[in-house]
Image (cartoon, rainbow, N blue to C red):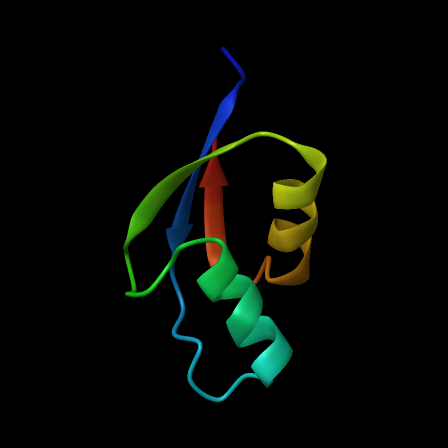
Length: 59
C-alpha cells in the first residue's frame, strides 16, 4: 500500500491567481479546514509545492 498524505486547506483561495485555484481544486479541497488523503507521489508533491502557503501536510 502506498504512503498517504493528509492535506488540509488552511487559507481561502479567494484572491489568488486562477492557476493556483485550479491546483487547490485538483487536490480535492473545497472548504477551509477540509482534509483529504492523497497518495505520496511526485505529482501530488508538485501540487503541494505550488501552494505551500495555503495547505498543511502530514504523513
